[in-house]
Image 1 (cartoon, rainbow, N blue to C red):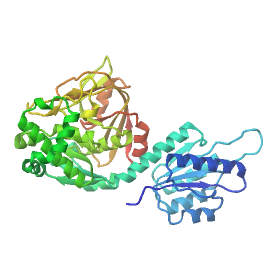
Image 2 (image 1 turned 90 degrees about the horizontal axis):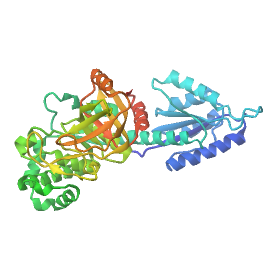
Image 3 (image 1 turned 180 degrees about the vertical axis):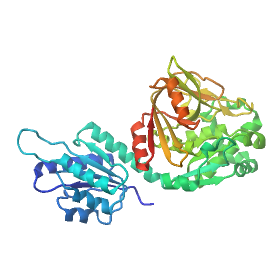
Image 4 (image 1 turned 45 degrees about the horizontal axis):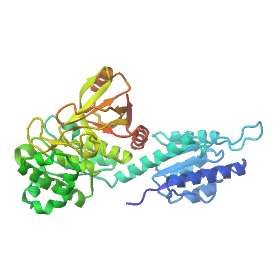
Length: 446
């Protein structure tokens, strides 16, 4: 796959104040190169249709930053739109001086010309920013949009592994390979859980010493697990880990119950926890879109994410408790307990993770949801992870939300959201909104 390419296209005409335009042009290049040194830039402002066409002809970027260094009529944008299908960010510059004298740039009027052409020629909405290269808001938006466009590009080469099938009644997590590829560019691979458990069964524990050492360094109290289950867990983790490494897997959606209890005799929960800690987004109950949501959150935050069921609310504290049987990444555990190990709350077989998650002042609740008509939507919500102990057997996190929690839950249920949500340990709401727009997905904010 070709490397990600962001193309800077500075358009204008020679009849405005070129000294001001040149200064803005040079400042813009410095800013873009500081964000991504590989941004493709022009050696000069493109002050004619001929110069513009010569510069863009034959290029195939993943993102275009179209800037009016001065006014330019809609013919300029039309040429870009005719030749390039990539998403476009239109950037309007502020007037450098307002002194009752000459209009130096007239960039804003040029933006209206470009926006008019875009609306006539494309169905999606153009990205747009207004401001100087020195504005903090411009720097932040450019950084976030380039990051989102990079992730969209990388997802074309991402493999998501389905391990087994969703249990009965959990069809919300089931993904069609063509649907996943056509919307998000992600490749869906599949393997039956019995194939991995067979590898684990036939493995010699001596071949998994590195994995055993890694596990012991991350988990607390594993020695209390029955020897057979502990050994089977280590071998299963190695089986998953090796398959992921061999097949360049970025995220997995793994079946868990009842197979791993009834057939293998040891849960997969802690295997998924270890993978999440290794920056492989790992969702249980074979939730493919949950795994994809985790992967996206992980890529933006550079931290493990947590997938959980909403199981309880507190109207006084205005919180939602998210819980699951025991798959949380070890690195998300409360520092006073560490990543403690126990047994599954229903099956009484271990090891599973048993802890409350650590606090976080700025968090994001996220879910890619599939609508009945086959289109997708992004749920994006602000949150604050509170300093709370483990709420139920398994792993849990208590998140304070901004809207009144009871009517919020009512709206989410009535709107038909799936019962798995991702808690991300960072404020990445803007990045998610930009990515949703790049994918043409509906944005739902509560």
